[in-house]
Length: 315
Image (tube, rainbow, N blue to C red; front, side, top):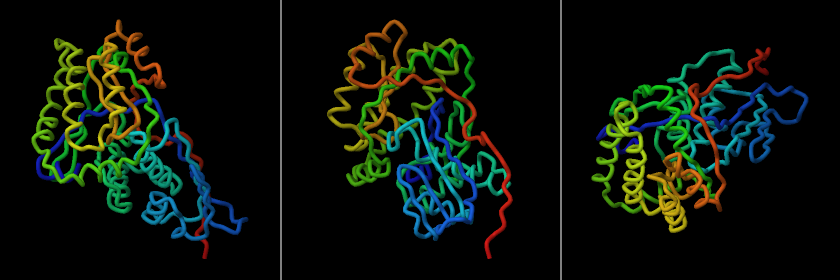
């Protein structure tokens, strides 16, 4: 959160994984009585960018001076679930817009502009890590300071990374919410949680050492997950609910060493660190939830199809 890291510094350990959102953009042929067509959870057909209801699309089109486009969006994951879908969309959309213009935008530029789009232009409360993760991809430590941020790859042996991946089990709670709403609800309490935040920040170093030191017990990462989740729950009332607490404790009782609710809180996905011999018992304990297998990925945003289009600005 910018309000914290500008003053105190900050850091996260972050990874991307193999669930994607797809943004397809092309120029709209001039046969219609509207100039822009958008397909996401709704369908919009408008003649003025100002009439677009979707705030991120409206502001991004203004920011990059996009006109007369057809945009379609689809995703592997539900929106508002704590897995960075909105930021992945923002980064992917900007990448597609630049490609349509015949321009290349680097990962830093895409991350910076997605942060500006969501946090400043759309005035959505939240952190910066999702936009950076979606843009850069891979397993990284992201450091934040008064001047901005830096992205440092976490160097893991392929064997240890595979073991970590196999020890993480993810489940969908079925609850969804807007991350910005959760952040606002937590901020409304006006309680000083500096001590918990300082401790969470310091634990990033411990967690990274567990991951990168091949002599360390990888299971300690699971125990740290449990500790930081219990710290995070103290920061705001909207982070967890009785239902989520109950589900989390079921996972721990089933044999998980630790875990957390992904994202701002309030719903979405639970991830647990589970030793291989406890996988079946944890899956059984969480049998009322959907199990979501996943694998880490390393690329972040990319253009997967590019066909240049001739476009001349309408007079």
